[in-house]
Image (cartoon, rainbow, N blue to C red; front, side, top):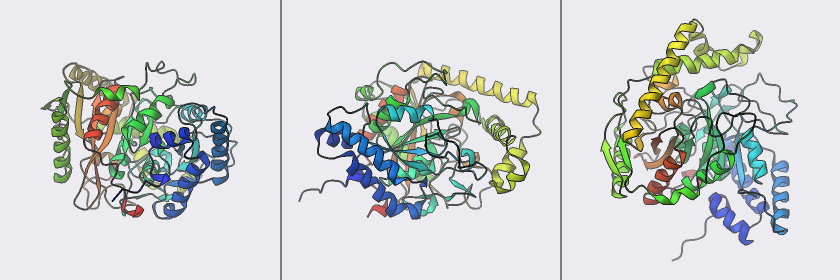
Amino acid sequence: MTTPPPAVADLTAAELLGRLEAGELSPAEAADACLARIREHDGLVNAFCLIDEATTRQEAHHAAQRYRQRHPMGALDGVPVAIKDVFLTRGWPTLRGSRTVDPAGPWKQDAPAVAALRRHGAVPAGKTTTPELGWKGVTDSPGFGVTANPYDPACTAGGSSGGSAAAVALGMAPLALGTDAGGSIRIPAAFCGIVGHKPTHGRVPLWPASPFGALAHAGPMARTVADAARLMDVIAEPDPRDPTLPAAGGSYLAALAEGVRGLRIAYSPNLGYARVDAQVAAAVATAASTLEALGAEVEEVDPGFDDPRAAFDLLFFGGAANALRAVPEAQRAAMDPGLIEAAEAVEGASMLDYLAAANERAALTERMSRFHQRYDLLLTPTLPLPAFAAGREVPEAWPEARWPSWTPFTYPFNLTGQPACSVPCGFTREGLPIGAQLVAARHADGLVLRAAHAYQQAAPLTDRRPGLLG
């Protein structure tokens, strides 16, 4: 008995490009398949806050013309890509999950990552849902509702790039853009069973500047590491509006084949301070064994820093408070009450408090730089727990009120600016995805993606899809 071919909407970006280049599929058919998947499932998961089928089809039509003329444009011509609604997108409103933004615009500019997608012929699939200003690790807002987990719609998709993660998991687009200032790519990637890569700070240009400053990163989300690397090759192209880093040397996609043999990997089950669910711990321990079997030298060791939560909270929520200064008092009643509370909680901090947090960030960055003189990679869980009930900032009966309390493995590496990738590594007994996180020294994005790819090739989970897909 032969296995039936996957539906068009279930193709990876690499598979889709192969069929487009061979003439076996048209960009219009690819776009229609993704739009049909959106119509079928988005009413349940709320992955998209903007769907514009006419524009998506028009861009697919332009791509089809280029293929007919045998002149495809760039590395993603004809591939649908979902865009988190914090990226400026010409012709579409960018509301950032807030009812305080006027949708009338005008919307005449693209963010650097979106401009790169256009240069490479990608087809915009729509704008994906985010919490207000991307402020928390789940995706819900007063204006745009709750984004549900494709594996169990009663659970959260995570956030703040939850719409992008749900869209990729369900085949609404093979690729998506996300942002990450405390885990916002990696959290929903882990909860939704996909790959999410937070690049080295500045590697992917960001403009306008994020309210969360140097904590903020833009990056790729996909079902496979290879697809994430392909998207990285596109969006890491330099843009004069954000001169943080020069152009990357070489191709992230081309570097994937080197494997992990001989790499020194530090495996830290809890970073020395986190409490981890037993099922999550077991899955990540198995991932460590898999990497060892692939030829890596794996040693169980903690990087040796205390929980930097207090410094992160001051820097992150200080950024939120600064962003709210531009919002008139009369409009704040329409905003997420949790965002207002979190911002108000740090308003009394002094400049010296802020500088002390910045000093702690600098010390942590130096510590991790020294750590990576000995170890090529650090392996941890992405999150200490599986997805919990949707519509909540923290799990039920949780002892703390704010979302960073359950993301101890993600925000430290926003403070340091290191590259970190979440890759699926298993499922709970209830069928919820679990993610493992690989971290490397700053600027070693290629190494992180290479190791994540080697692991994913040895332990593929991309064929296990959400139950909503039947």
